[in-house]
Amino acid sequence: CLQEKISSQMEVARPMFQVGFKCDPPEKGDRGIYQEFVGDLAAEVLFGESSELYLSLYEQGLIDPSFGGGLDTVPNMAILTASGDSDDPEAVRDAIIEQARIIAEEGIPEADFMRIKRSTLGSRIRSLDSFDSVCFRICAYHFSGFDYFRFPELYESVKAEDVQKFIGQVVVPQRCSLSVIEPKEE
Image (cartoon, rainbow, N blue to C red; front, top):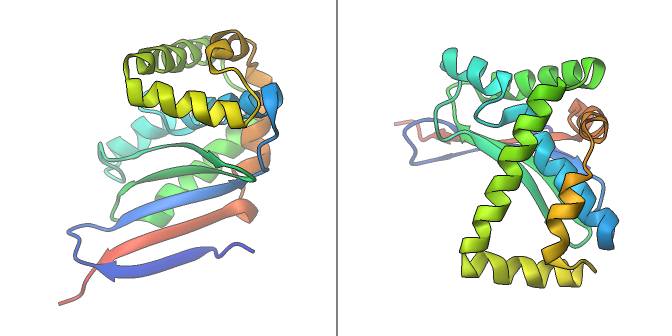
């Protein structure tokens, strides 16, 4: 059962928020890692720094450079999240849901998808420079039944249609919860 909105007050200068979309639990092996890659790409397509939505929200002053998101997975649970500082977190949430609806209906332009896919693959490859990151991923993927060093070949197989389908199924109001930390009133 999802709560639509959770709010509390703390010592912050500007409201902070995190919006989450409940995903289906990840499977094991290649299929589960493929689902993770689809979710990562969905996050980039929806609210990555070069996405239409990010630029629009930034120009409107609804987000700042603290805004970002991604897919988080643990055994038997996955969630697509976006977070940051905003004076109107509800407007950001609503814009994400609306952009998801548009993508689900119209698809992802091939040139945009390929650019985002190359960029995110490059980030994963650069993460190989981090010993901690490599150790963490080797262990996590091992327990998911996947050989981490096979990720480039599986990543290459991700299709725009699968990302579009994921966005249409997951980024909907019924799977959404918004958490907001408001500045304490004086």
